[in-house]
Image (cartoon, rainbow over all chains, first blue to last red; front, top):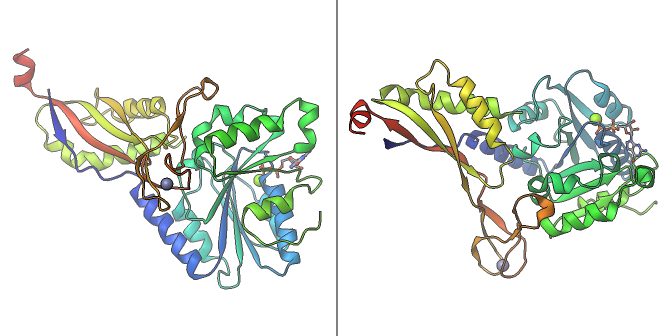
Length: 220
Length: 129
Ligand SMILES: Nc1nc2c(ncn2[C@@H]2O[C@H](COP(=O)(O)OP(=O)(O)O)[C@@H](O)[C@H]2O)c(=O)[nH]1
Ligand SMILES: [Mg+2]
Ligand SMILES: [Zn+2]
């Protein structure tokens, strides 16, 4: 047996280049983009809705890209909060990619936008391998998923700078300990920020906006 | 799972070279960055299926891990990072922080995914066994 060297071009190189192009476009247009990842039902749409309300209240122009396997429920929710929104049906895809986001941005009024939320496909794992070129990335998990989520998927959390633990209102009812999630996370990601939220009762939204680096007037 | 898409891209990219190879391809050695989430098992399964009918049929996909390496703009450190290898995390987790000064770091290696080499067996090599 012998080895044959291969012209080893990175299989995901094109993805990285496209993400870099998105990053440049967003910078040029002065739009701060946030990629919102997390399992179905963790509360991604609810959190974005709350943030849109706060940010719009400060006169900021918010855009959204809603990725749903089918239908346009999230997109309609964003529109009803006054965001400029684009709906993407991803069907069987397990994640958004930079190319799809690039096309979606062509249909958004990028010159007017200040902030762009991209709700990724409801899947905790796959999107972590595909950067979109956003300045911020956050992963949403909810208390109902248990307190061992960080332990089960440490590599995802080790490289995501904002962890949102949502549905804090249900923590006691499901017998989970938010502190365990926070302390696991701080061990594997010392520079990460963990934020506890309850999107349903609008708790922790300002903390989340602050973690994202958005100015906010404290109304909670 | 996107492992199928990744493997199908990998096979397509290698086909032109594979068709010129004399002998049997018995292994495809893939380098995977430690920070990649893609699963080795899912990659191997996808490969087994997608290799059918190509010069890669019957070959094994072997994943070799590339360790994380970083650079620190605060203190100038360049190199490997510490890991948390507490059993609660099931496997060692790289910490993206400077092991010297605990500042934020830039990742220089650990996200790659590329085929490094093929392992090939020619008829002559088989006979000389
Ligand atoms: N109790 C409670 N329910 C929530 C909270 N956030 C979201 N939900 C509910 O959880 C369900 C899924 O929320 P959604 O925002 O659509 O999740 P997504 O699939 O991640 O976008 C909806 O019924 C929400 O009303 C929360 O903080 N507390
Ligand atoms: Mg949603
Ligand atoms: Zn340092």
